[in-house]
Image (tube, rainbow, N blue to C red; front, side, top):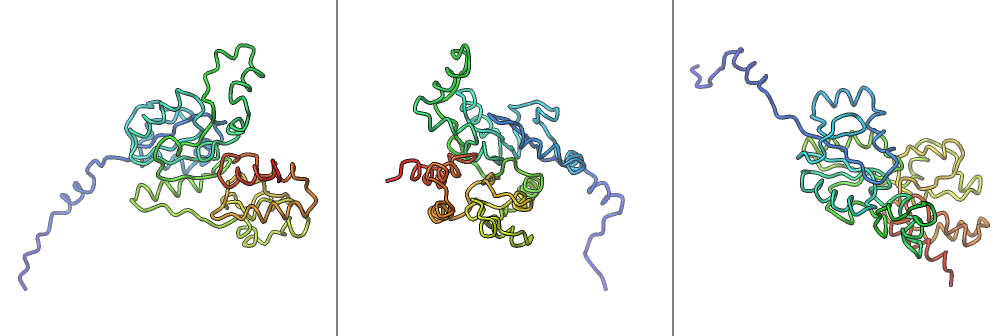
Length: 280
């Protein structure tokens, strides 16, 4: 039977498939932080080397390449916005990026730096108490998450994030797939791993019932209570958990302190802290 299908020579197909393809361009930017979330990339080891063969890492100061103003397909941002220079720089990062992903507690909720937001004197009071010449310290009045300054396409919580989170999101975004983030609470992860519940069995003030999973239930695996480094879970019942802590014998100040730590600027944790900080 005659056919009209055109068959290309094998050599021509090989040349077509071997043609140069533009590689995705990736950047990793640092703002106010401890660099721990950038280590999620470096700790990936062989996976990072494989990634470098498939994308162009155009800016990642901790790993080598430095080009902060380069246009990229995907920008990862670590750290809170704490200085006037950072407030301006994050807008340029956003303008140069197709997708922007904030990684870690500092970038998603302000991190430990955000504790200064509750100081009556703001950043000035802290710098005057710590530095001999505070006039050289340029700080905003508050330390805030990236999403309060520019549009963020995806937030990855954690202190720090882990390599699995980062590489999963990177792969999904580069393939044009909407990233899927596990929304379970830490308690679900504990049950999956068959850890003994430290809240029920040991009476420890565990934050697991209101905390986003992602760490692999690391602390409960060692019999330690969770302190919410992966931030508030979806629809957290912080009021019920705070009452449970009081039932365990914690005084109001101690209950408040459980919500006033790494993710103190997260709205649900901040509201519960205020409630117990100033009880009726």
